Length: 140
Image 1: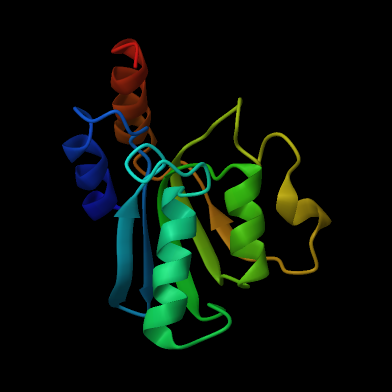
Image 2: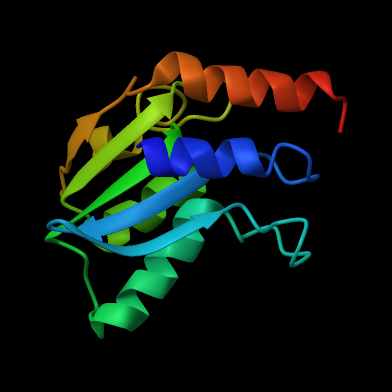
């Protein structure tokens, strides 16, 4: 989590919402990324989608059922569905998101799914929330 929290801090000066994610398989980090929506001018380039795509390619796999994802913010419906589709084993995230989150808030994707990953939220929650708060206070 510290790796992605530091990555989020590093992009605070950009115009990307500072959400970062990493996928690990055991103790090996497969992919780390931040949101690239603005940089690539694509609404789907959320950090979770980017790391899932990169990890599937790196592992030459269809599923990530032995992998864990670490995210600085509770995934939105798009990202939660993406993680559900690849059968991610574990989801660890920092800040909860009442507005856009879709695990404990909103549509609660995994309550309606056959696939049930292990989910732990609130890891380094204060640090993750503070980064997001600083970003939105800039008025970008």
